[in-house]
Length: 193
Ligand SMILES: NC(=O)c1ccc[n+]([C@@H]2O[C@H](COP(=O)([O-])OP(=O)(O)OC[C@H]3O[C@@H](n4cnc5c(N)ncnc54)[C@H](OP(=O)(O)O)[C@@H]3O)[C@@H](O)[C@H]2O)c1
Image (cartoon, rainbow, N blue to C red; front, top):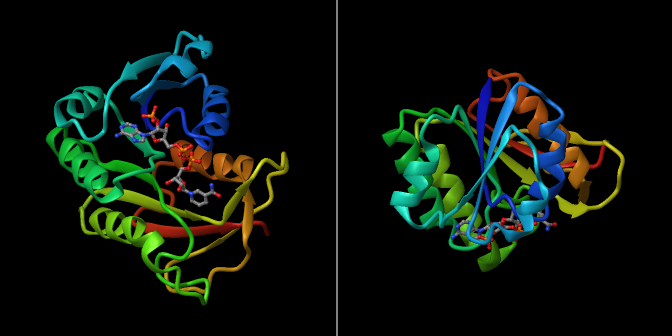
């Protein structure tokens, strides 16, 4: 059984990822958010709901106990969140982290996105310097398209595309969880292929 902690489990992307992950009978999901009410509809034996704040180290540290993989789907004070996630993972001797970031953090789209992406740049740096087995995901603008259709780019390559379906990102996260050695230490851009 693989234990996966989803931080920001009520997020628009996590909403699409969670049902995909639940198709795998070998996964146990812990869903973490400040407001867990929207998650009460997810009733399954292999799901556990935890109400907590990522900025509260004690709550985060407790939720990390016994996990194998952390999938962070967060928005807000991302640098502070990243610092807390790395600290709690190290405290619990966890290694594998999947972190949702954004396209544009390295100016790889050919445009400068200015201050709006600063929390994404800062948090990415924290993750990249963490020593954890991380995969950063840099998605294009999300769509609700049902198709799985994506192309990946690595750090240093120009970002190609402007949109990607949430379903495609879910397929990538599912693959990362099923294949523990895949894309460790990578920062993957994802956009419609
Ligand atoms: N939309 C796009 O096209 C797009 C494109 C590229 C990248 N992104 C980025 O991808 C990330 C995920 O997107 P999304 O649409 O799923 O985001 P979202 O809908 O805004 O969800 C963010 C999640 O973070 C949780 N959260 C916020 N502060 C928290 C805290 N202190 N402690 C615990 N949980 C907290 C929220 O839950 P609670 O409030 O209940 O705690 C929510 O579950 C975001 O950073 C987004 O900016 C989005």
